[in-house]
Structure formats: structure tokens, C-alpha cells
Image (cartoon, rainbow, N blue to C red):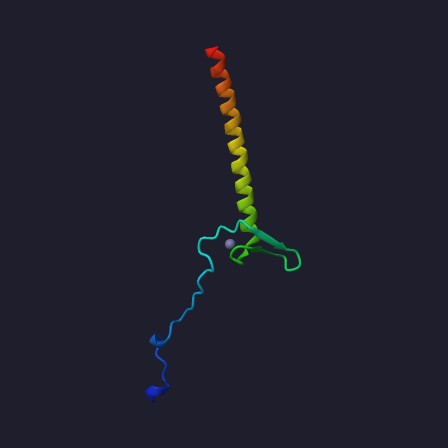
Length: 86
Ligand SMILES: [Zn+2]
């Protein structure tokens, strides 16, 4: 066999991995394209998975409600404490 016609596996990489445009973008500024039915980050231009985005919104909303509940409980605790002082 002629060696010049054999391509060695070490001649070139098997995979090419494209680097992310912005590795640290959290995709907070979102554009919803109704025609393309896609969600795109306006900061890094990445296409965002709609389910991942909905999950992040739901998680954020759940955290807000937990925070509000904590603050209401803290207000009640402080009001009770004030009542014992005065
Ligand atoms: Zn982004």
C-alpha cells in the first residue's frame, strides 16, 4: 500500500468545538421572535432553549415569593418584639 494515500488520524482533529460567544452571559435581555418561534439573547445573540428560559423565570418567581414570605414573617416578628418593649 502506498503510504502517501493513507491519512493518519493524527493529521487533523476529529472534532471542532466552536467556542461560545460569551461564556459568562446569563441571557437576561431576551428577544422573543414569534415568526421564528425562537428565544434569542440580545446580549450574546445565543439561541436560548425556551424550556430552560421558562424554568429560569419560574425559579426566579418562586424565589421572589419565598423572599416576600420571609419579609412578612420578619415584619410580624419585629412587631411582636416592639410590642413587648413598649
Ligand atoms: Zn446571552
